Length: 66
Image (cartoon, rainbow, N blue to C red; front, side):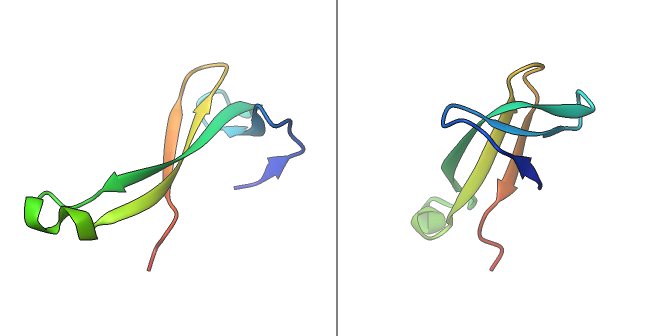
């Protein structure tokens, strides 16, 4: 995932929906992957979530692929 120089408020990345480089809002979320309540506390993983400012398309990428 290539990025170009950006400001602290947004990151310019390629948007597959728009077909060009656009500003994106980027955040990291901790998501629970297990559906079983007894294992939920052990199945949290970080995800990088980007949202295109122009079209609103959102993509997620699991950060820990261990």
